[in-house]
Length: 205
Image (cartoon, rainbow, N blue to C red):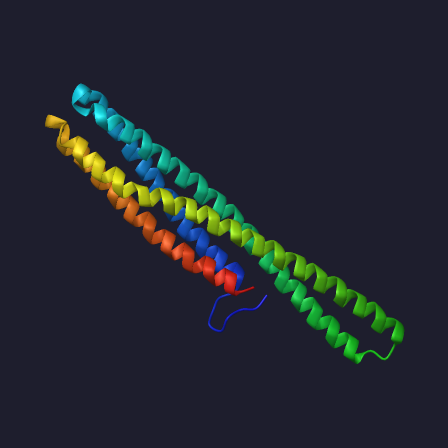
């Protein structure tokens, strides 16, 4: 596992990623609350907001999916953090074993140390492959969130169209559409930050 010059270690990057994912989940929970509020307003509006009800279901589903995918990414990134620390320890052990091998004059001890070096090197490669596989999963999970956030622009536009038909409830439904639009922008900002951190993790291997 290499570290690009000026780049934090992988376990530090993973911790930074966890921070962005926490904010992403928090934003998605606010979006879920907006969907719940929209359901209440649509219910009170009756026939005036009939077209708004399926939209609230979509918003709620999108928010729930985002929370779940962010949780999955966080679990994966924590695994990356743990295995990254294990890789660093294995690499340090290999370095120390090589130093010891260079100092020993005993053929028996040298063979034993070389065996430890080979074992540690194999363990290190296995951990690195595991992290590479995990990071592929990270990218896929983040893409799932991105696809849902992209769809929110259509939802917001449709929400405003339906709100315009809701009479006295229009301003409330427009306010909800605004909150969803704001949440989507925040999610997109976090997605961009997460992509950069995942790219940094991938460059570490």
